[in-house]
Length: 193
Image 1 (cartoon, one colour):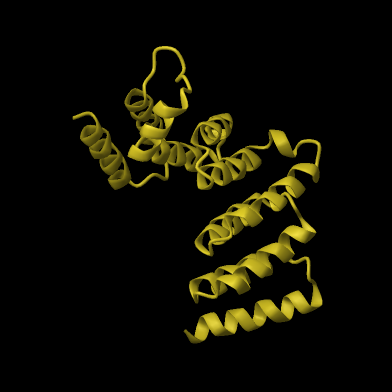
Image 2: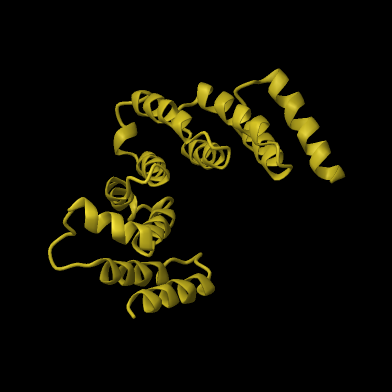
C-alpha cells in the first residue's frame, strides 16, 4: 500500500508540473482504479483525453470505467471527440476497438462485431478484438437478440463456427494464456449441445 501511495504522490507532482504527461496520467488513473476510486480514475482519463483524444489505451480504460460506474452514456462524447481529432482516427485499429467496446456495452452487438472485425488483424489490438468477438458470439443473450433482430450472418457461417475460427486465430497469438483457449473451447462445446 505504501508504494502505491508514494507512486500516486509522485504522479500528482509530475502532473502539476506537466499536465500533459501521459505516463503519469495513466499510472495515476490505474492506481486510483486499483484503490476503487473510480471517479478519480475517470477524472484522470478525462484529463488525458483532453490533451490527446486519440490515446486509445486511455480511452479503452475510460470506457470500461464508465461502464463499471453505470455511466456508459457518457462515453459517446469521448468517442466522437477522438474520431474528430484526426482524419485518420476512424481508420485506426485502436479506434475500432474502442468503438466496438462502446457498442458492445450498449448491446449493439452486430455493430460491435463489425468494429472488432475491422481491427482483429492488428498487432496491438487484434487479440482484444478477437476476445471481445468471442464474448459476443458465446453470449446466449446475443444469440437470442441476433435471431430476433433479423440480422443475417455472413454467408455460410453461424456463431459457433465463427467462434471456433476466432479461437483458432487466438491460438497463434504469442501472448495468449492457454487456459483461455480451453475455456473458450469449453463454451463452444456447451453451446453446441
